[in-house]
Amino acid sequence: MISPREAVEQAIFVAVGAASLTRDRAQAIVDDLVRRGQMTDEEGRLTVDGLMARVRNSGEGQGIVGKIEGGVHGLLRELGIAQRDDIADVDQRLAELEHRIRLLEEASGATPPPAPSAD
Image (cartoon, rainbow, N blue to C red; front, side, top):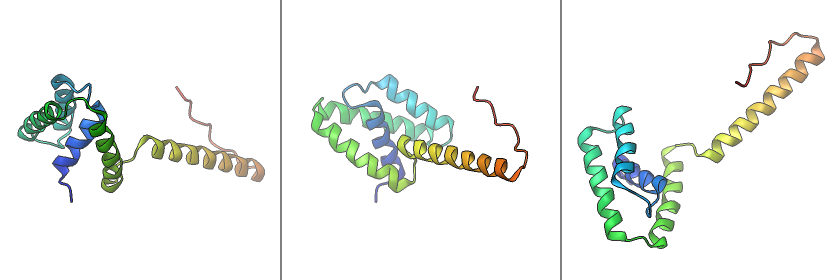
C-alpha cells in the first residue's frame, strides 16, 4: 500500500508533468496543500526535494511519464478522489434529474421554485 505522502508526490508529479516540472510550480502546489492542512511544512519541503530529485534522475523520457500517469489514475480511484470525468458524469446526471423533477411538477400542477441562475 502506498503512503499518503507518496500518493501526493505522485499526483503532483503527474499533474504538473515530468518534463515541465519546476521547483517553483511544485512548491506552489505543495504550499497550497500545506495551507489546506493536508501536509506539514516539513513534509512539503521533503516532497519538493524528492520530486526534484526524481525529475533529475528520470530525465525527460516519455516512459516514466506514462507509467506515472497510469499509476496515478489507479491511485486516485483507490484514494476516492474524483476525476474530471467522474464530476462531469455526476453533473450530467444531476441536470437530468432536475429536468425530470421539473417535468413531474409541471404535470402535477405544482409550482416549482425558480431555477437558479447560471451566473
